[in-house]
Image (cartoon, rainbow, N blue to C red; front, side):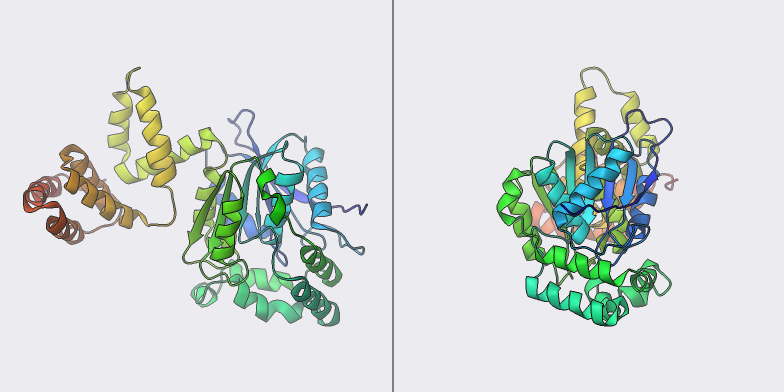
Length: 387
C-alpha cells in the first residue's frame, strides 16, 4: 500500500462554540488550500463557525512531493490520517475537482466518518484515462508552466480574469507554476484510475453537488447525473462560474456549505438572511412576540424559508423579491405584501421597479388585487426611509 503524507492548516472554531463540527476542505488539481480563502473568511464570520481543516494535495502548497504512484483511495486515507492527527472523529467534507473526488471516496469508503458531502465541479469519474495520461506526459516533459494557459481557460468563466486583474484567479495561476511537476503528473494518473460511478448509492451522508454553468470539464449535465445517483444529494448550478467555484464565487460556496453543516448552521444562516432582507426591527418584533405555541412555526420559517429558499444562490435577492411580490399580490396577502415591499427596497429594487412588478401582475392577478397592492405600496413609500 502506498503511504502518502499530506499536510493541512486549521482554522479553530469560534471561542463560544461548544463541540463545533469539523469541516475538511480539499482543493483542485494544480491549486493549494488558498482556493478556499474566500470561503473560509465568510464562514469564519459566523458566531458558531465550525473548525476548518484545509489539506493540500501531494506536491502542492505545504504537502510534501510524491515520487511513487498513488490512487484517489490513497489520498482519502492520507486525509483521514491528517484528521486523526488533530483529534479524529466524524467530519463534514467539501472538495473541488480532484478534491471533490477525494471527498466522494471518503463518503463511500469511510461513510461512518462523513457527516456531509459537498462536491464542487467534480465527479465520480472525471475526464478520460487517455486525457489524463496525456496531461501527465506533458507536465513531465515541460513542467506545470505548460498547462497554465489551458488551466486559465478551464478554471474560470469568460471575462472573470479581465474583471478581476488583481484578484485570486491570477494568483492561483502563478501558484500553479510552483506545484511539483511529478506530483502533479501522479495526481493526473490517480484521476485516470478513479471511477466510483457504481458506488454512489453507498453514500449515506446528505450531499450538495454544485456545477458551474461555464465548466467544460465537469459539465452541469454530468454534475446533475452525479447528484441523481447520490441518495440524499441536492444539485445546484451557478450561472456565473466555471471550474473553481470556491475561488470564483466564495459567497455562494459558503452559503451552500452552511446548508449541509447541520441544523444549527441552517438556522443561524436563516436568521442572518432574514435580518438582512426584513431588517432588525421587524425581526426583533417578531422574535419578541414568540409564544410557546408559535415557537415551532418561527423556527420553521427561519430554517426553511430563510435558511434554505432565500439562501439559495440561483436567484439574486432582487429577483426573489420580484417573485415574492407577484405571489403575494396574486394571493391577496396584504400583511405580508406590506412587509415585502419594505424588503424589496432593502434588497435594492427601486420604487419604479416595485410599481412595475405590481403593474405587470395586474394582467395575471386581476385589477382589484393590483389596485389594492398599489395602495399598500404608496403607504410604505410614505414611511420613514429605511435605516
